Length: 106
Image 1 (cartoon, one colour):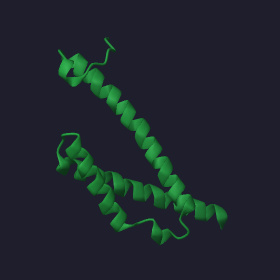
Image 2 (cartoon, rainbow, N blue to C red; image 1 turned 45 degrees about the horizontal axis):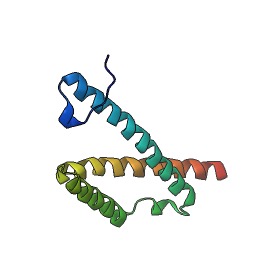
Image 3 (tube, rainbow, N blue to C red; image 1 turned 30 degrees about the horizontal axis):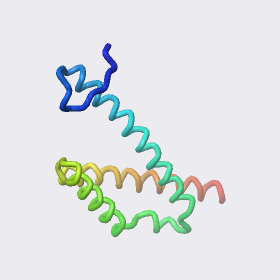
């Protein structure tokens, strides 16, 4: 298997495309792991459970993602959909981390 990674414009085969996508997916998984580490930090830092859900911050994060998507030349509506799922998953994860912290201290 050819593991060479080339730019999308330089791809000449589906193997090239798939190698690039697989490499990016691995990077995304690593970056999401870091993002969720910040959710664990937030759960550790926030004093009260009700502070985990912050609708104003959620809207800001999604708007930031839409601006970044526009700047990177991909559809803002897709960014909004992806970040909606990401933020809700992050909130659920942070709530679970907060509850686990509370259970340990009880």
